[in-house]
Length: 322
Image (cartoon, rainbow, N blue to C red; front, side, top):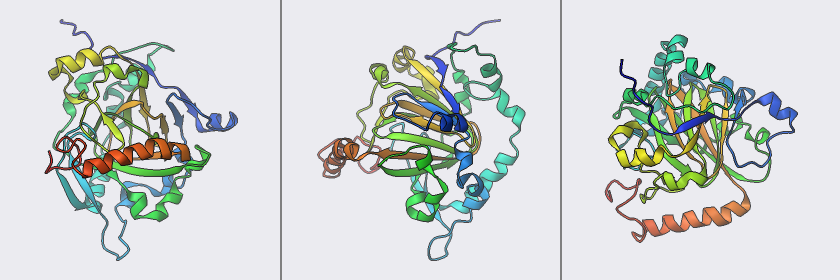
């Protein structure tokens, strides 16, 4: 029997606390590392109201079915994707059907880190991931990514009581991700802090602290608010140079299940792999000072980009330019 050595970086499990433990500590304070709050979303109205079936019933103000822009391929990987505007109802009902047929036993064996492997880890133990799971990725699968559903349907904002987790004065905005199993959001980091809220399904999240950015091969491709990586986790074995650098990092692994919320600090590289049909909300926030400094810088770059003076022809937002 040939033993294949593991590839890629070593990982440790993300810090976890329950929503009740967080409340006993006095709530969420300033921090620079990621943390997974188990059960946080279960305390909010979204837990009861945001199912595939109920979201499929969303209507526009004129009573017509809600539509959204769908993409294919890997989100945030740097390629400019084909975008199609489609009704969300039939798509979400298909996801609901797929979610019902996925068994609990399937989940125990699948993923970058199977549930059985995770159960046998010792505290503080470092481990590799099973990148062969990426062979299940379907590159032409349609994915509802970065939908500004809270902007289109403002009444849904009340379903996420993020103030209970994240007190303080800040501007917040969110994007919804809805899609089948085996969709991937590629390695990147965002300039604001991010609460990644999982409403349905389970996702695996890879996290790399900012102090290891020298190994993450930042891309020069422009994408507003995000810095992309040249490392594509869906085809590591085809990228020897990227794999060599990626293997040097000490990374963090989080398994975000339905009802959990993961805090991703600004500047933290991350990638997301869906294990099941899922509904996720990425909720970003900026304090007034962060708006002036980070937000102002991003808006200037975006303005210069639209004027064809900054990385025009090398962006993830204009197919014609690409």
